[in-house]
Length: 501
Ligand code: NAD
Image 1: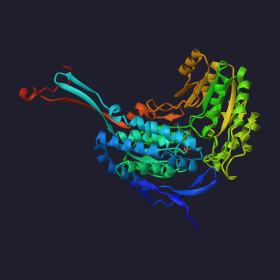
Image 2: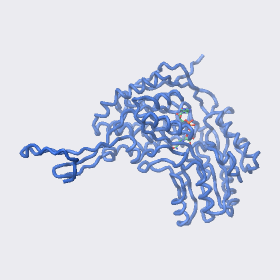
Image 3: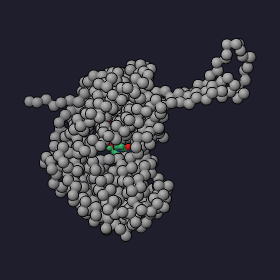
Image 4: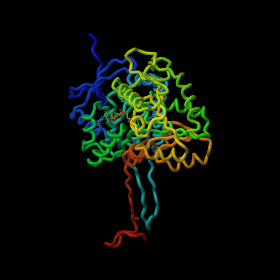
């Protein structure tokens, strides 16, 4: 009998089985079978991971900028040369096609490259002679141990939104990846070690709510960066702030793409298909609602349907456009939304339930699905479905489109397709959403801007990466100093409040 492989924690530079006895299943979604188990941490395992990070902090904090940068630069080079191996791990546990797995690594690598400029980015300020003989300056110092908690849909990119900045600024890290696709985190930990990162500076703790709660309540964890669904993001934000921690908690989404009659309809159709069905719709920036002005709706839908017929679904290791969903339960949940929409009187234009996938019969398949004329009160419209389902709402004009988007609970991403600069400008000014695309369907900001939504899509006031990321992982200290010149001797005694002089 062959033994199922178990994904261990990675603590203080070595794999750790820990004391927790619970194990979770890890599937290969394209095969539809469990291929591994993952350890689910017990509270004592959380303590061990945090203790390792806390023990490593003083020396890492005191490591020179030059040395920290050298290690991260070496990590960048190793990652670049071996990212094909990492992509295979992602595909085997998440299901996304290999090209998409490579793209996610590249987007994560962008943040690493941004962090390679950290000595410049994290410079403080210096003002000479703010008062006679007095200088003032500020420095950005690390926080200590920080916890990263990530979702299943980007097992590399999302941890990499935070990890390089946290490490470059001198923090030590405990990453709690999704238990659904845990192996990529261990691969990254081993590569960081190979790059020269001292043991304990980066630790991986696997688990579920027990592990998360352990980090949220741990007195030695200074900050939490969370990415996941909105209910859990809210919970993490409220729990961690109650425990006095700094928190950024990025949540779910329901992203609209608004198409005006003057848009390039071929570009809009290409973009809708790519943004709705890429990674099987399991992206927080996926387009899940197409809001189209009625006069061009039928024409645009025809063009989208033509393209959807060309989308190949199958095992991500083969040459397909779209892979399976993450688990059988999730696929069934997504399917239930399609069934409900059908019952509610929406028009099912393309039904992905009958897809013929190029993969194992038991894979968690659902093909691209298009549902027209959905009602804004229906669950297919209001809920984040997180699957390859595009819902169409017809609107009268730009105003109705903006109003529709602004009434939504989420505010992660949105896009407008138009050739009118005036319409685009009004859209970008008035829409209550954090990340806007103008003729760009998935407007994930580059690494030197910051990523984060509004409303129910984010809790906390500091976004991920860019300068907001640098500020999240550092605290500013200001120093006001006076060095009497030896010849001047002691100052007169003065008990007054310091004033400019
Ligand atoms: P999830 O909320 O189920 O899980 C996220 C993390 O929280 C995981 O590490 C998980 O182990 C942990 N977790 C799950 N249940 C918990 C509980 N009850 N208590 C404490 N921790 C718990 O999310 P998911 O299904 O892994 O990922 C998909 C979700 O993530 C979608 O909602 C998607 O929109 C969102 N997401 C958001 C962004 C963003 O930047 N806003 C990016 C990627 C994904």
